[in-house]
Image 1 (cartoon, rainbow, N blue to C red):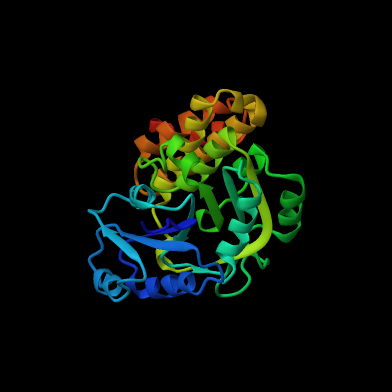
Image 2: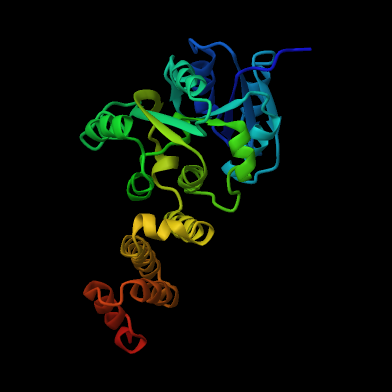
Length: 302
């Protein structure tokens, strides 16, 4: 019987054949060798199938109808034979010691459900910094540990920088397939509530910026972020006390406010007013939201 690998690397892809080869090669060049590479084609219509067939014998690949990145990753998880799951995006690059770094920690801390690290930018520094998690914060997180507030307040978690126990992923039901943007934050917070989570001050992947991941669907991004927060406090009521009710209300109100402005700009005044109503309900004394509510009254728009 063939020995199961220690790690299963899962790449979900959709119409990214022009980036996918670089991503695959970066995994195949890993210094750590006890892994399998699983690629799930989420219904691509470009040259993805032909590219994957050229790697026959080096990868395992599966194809499904387009159902979104979370569904594709869950397919990869179901087929994974490793005890640990690592993820890579089809347009990003793994550092050569990506798996060695994360697996080295995971094996020494078998009770850990999730370990993740930092990322860099493929084209050089962005936002006046070299790494996705700013250096000072990265050092602090590695030394003092990750809190729920760290995950909630800023975008410090990337699936591409993580290694997760397959048993923990299965116990949580995998990624939420109803969330198409923000599924990584949802998973990280659910993992934190259930299992030990660790962070390493190390760059393990390079993020590639391009038009498709810069623009995206802004309304869906906001709606999914709202869903992630509301889901957290619904499924884990103790999160309200850990984060503070005011912090949660402030975050939700701001997301609804941005949603309202986007809808107003897009010519949807009814949708804008409804979103702004939600913002006001969470921060009723915040003057900015009240002011917009008055400005956007139906009679004032005529």
